[in-house]
Length: 147
Image (cartoon, rainbow, N blue to C red; front, side, top):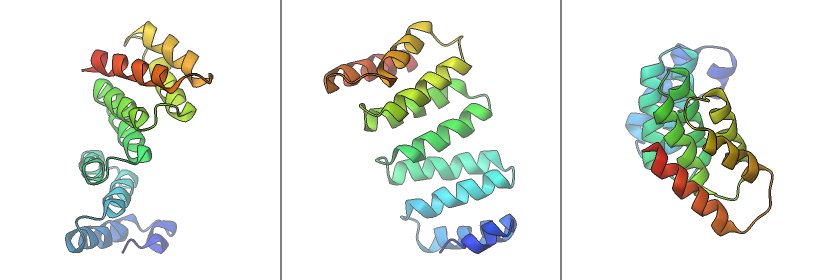
């Protein structure tokens, strides 16, 4: 299992090795892949972290935080369109989530070159209470544009 003590002590190389062994022993445990990805980020192994975070998303596509973390890493690596798709996928899991709309609005704020209509949509829906079908329709439209 993931050794949080190693992480707390800043012993990331040792934590990475322990997590790699755990992933081999229990490959279907998404949280192990997630912690492996986070540990690799601390070791500045971004490509390996992205690989682990993508595995998490495939193993458990129902947890928005997994998508958000992958999006943040992709965005930091300049893969803005791939990051956008992850933010959208996270939001699509819970279309009424103000947090998801806020994350998307922040993404579009950092990337004004993407499209202005998306920023307006996110700004409006991040702070409103409306019919859930409106959220779903908005996500569907944004997903089509992101492809």
